[in-house]
Length: 316
Image (cartoon, rainbow, N blue to C red):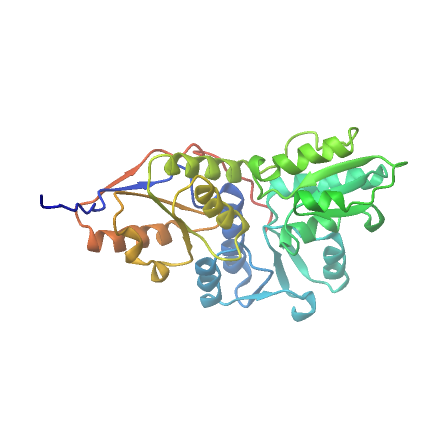
């Protein structure tokens, strides 16, 4: 009997219902645009305003200069502080040098800063859950008394903690981690320190959770998931990990040039999402590239659940 082989062809593209710019990123980008409009260029921005290559390159073309060291900003100039948050010592240095600071810190990150400060004022040993070296964690660390600060990234780190048993202890989390990212660590912290204090409200960013939930929905019926996001973006990398942990072949790409069309061989349904700092045109470029090879594919997307969410813009 003759054996027949059947090859599947891509039939559907499903876009995550909630993806791309969150309110904090949208606000930060608007702040830079308004600052360019009012003060012109060169405009200095401390750290990448958001972690996305396309956004950064766009602003560089307009004359924005991204710096890490405040010493690289000439005296008396305007400097924008990134959405990830900045340690208080940097604000003090800027004031001492007569720099005009425009603060683009995400309000959700600011909430964590306030809680970190309250913990230190009350002498509470503070465990920060996050990624070593991430800009948000560096900023939040600056609001904690160094003698009370402990940073953990994994559950194994908890075993190495040397907490003073005579002092109270609390924990805070990096906002770009999801409930799932932190659940195991928080559970273990409560097991080791039954009286540990958490923040009054969960300080997980709503946008992080919404985007991971949307990716899980895609992974439930797609046989390939592509995440648009830069390598430096924590939340974008977590999205790829989320779909991969669901058992679905998953990739992260910075721009459409990194798309490998071989990934679609034998696939019928592809899910596409993007990190909270990714502009929509990056996703559109990926979809359009797929349509070149698969012109009859159907594209689906449900309405986002973040309609109407906006953060106030500070005085520029």
